Image (cartoon, rainbow, N blue to C red; front, side, top):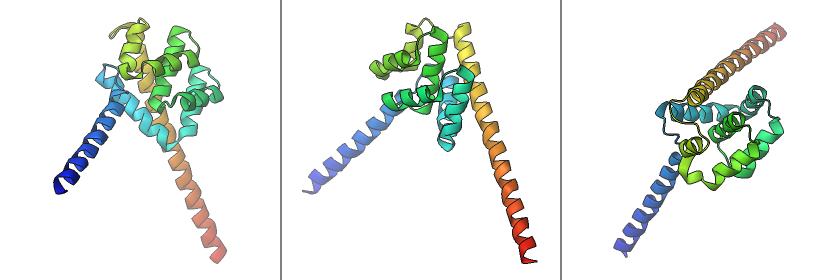
Length: 167
């Protein structure tokens, strides 16, 4: 019985490990810098999802509702939503068409999608994609810092009002 429980526990952990590695595999582009930027996009967007969607909408002239719908419909992460939007812009294809194509071939990752769309590593289009991702991350970080600063100022004002009320 003890061996059975040990074997079952090992299989469960192995399954969890493999599931986790396939999740990581989905965010690969073939470029470590872009993969890192997509990870940063995911982290920043989790902190403020509405701001991420608003910014992505604004930068790519895509309605916020369309972005949210594609993200939800195809179960895309924030990084995947960013990439689908970027590929949609580059290829002049509708966002939902790009997201559906990615969803059908999800195991291959964005690097294969890029190659299938004629975006080769090192090409001007690929370099622009990386530069835009970097810009997006920077903008999200700046926005987050500004919001934090505003919140701190509001809290300070609130404390000052509280002190004046007591006096």
